[in-house]
Length: 375
Image (cartoon, rainbow, N blue to C red; front, side):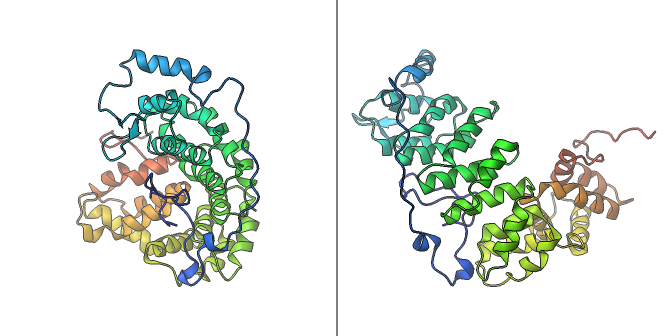
């Protein structure tokens, strides 16, 4: 299992791999997959009458429209062989790819799942949404993986409803990906439906699913996460996503508990644990970080040398799970740069300031925009 939320499984890997999962606890304990005993699976929902392999009725109009705009043969050909075997190394699947697979009655579920998992074409959204009820778990898992990537500028309501349904799927990997999608990939989407769906998975028997749900709620600073985190972090062994969740929530009562889990992590997790320690510190994120960021801008960020990027990297790690702390950090850095131009201008046009502005910080202005006139 990967600790990196940005990792993507190759289409030919088994359904277990997923981004953002917990690490092996301190590198000393069995992987979660070796400890987990699968719960009895419930049968998948029956297909609606007349929905033959998802190739007719609800999708017919979409497929016809795709045909009218150039057919399935336009552009780089995504298929080879009589079955239309998908070639992931040669081209990314598009809406036409998915539509052609759906239109072929003999398309294997595994081939459809591969194409769906790697689809980033916004036009495929109406094709993928009905597949959330596909009888094959691999296809449903691929849909949970792909929906955030094809959402584009569309209203997220239907996508959220599909992912909420998938978060309660009988298959653990489907639940896991759906909770990751709802909790982290669509963390800007909030509401009672999303929160309740994630809260329903806080006691899930699957470790990754449970941790993803906790992180998703913590990102929204839902009060239900605090007692859960206190209990989880009081244990001897914890998962890295539970540490991430503590940082995302940022409650000072978790600081001592996080401090108790500083050792034993793989190198790629250490920075995240340190970030959580800063985010839960009742004294703030640390003068060393704030001073370092101010110096970063004095040195000409983002044109400073790579050797000077350390504090900027630390700040980005903090903001990955706790963007709402951006105004606090930006204000303190701005104070430290008082009278220092062009460092202040660089800072006010930076990504840090933009994030702070998104959360109500009044000083941010787009790069190159003149400051407001004094009143």
